[in-house]
Amino acid sequence: MTRDVVSASACRLGSVKQGDRVVLIDDLLATGGTAIAGFDLVSSLGAEVLEFAAVVALPFLDGVGKIHSHKVCVPSS
Image (cartoon, rainbow, N blue to C red):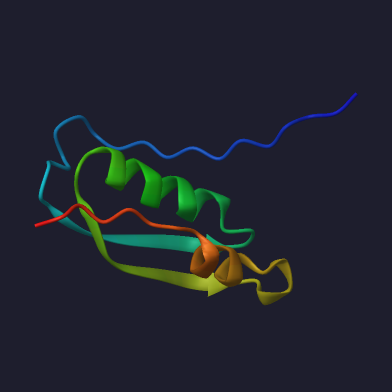
């Protein structure tokens, strides 16, 4: 049996609006999946991730590299 790993992020309805600039903070950056899901969620709401920070990173899992290689869609002004 194989299992697909899915990362998801959620936010309170109405807390992020189109045109907002958002700072994402992750308590633990491991594989980068949750952070990328956060980038995608913010982008899907028409907002922009202005900055991303992680309190702790596990470099051997290459989450930072995955975030850097992830194409983040920034809304046009």
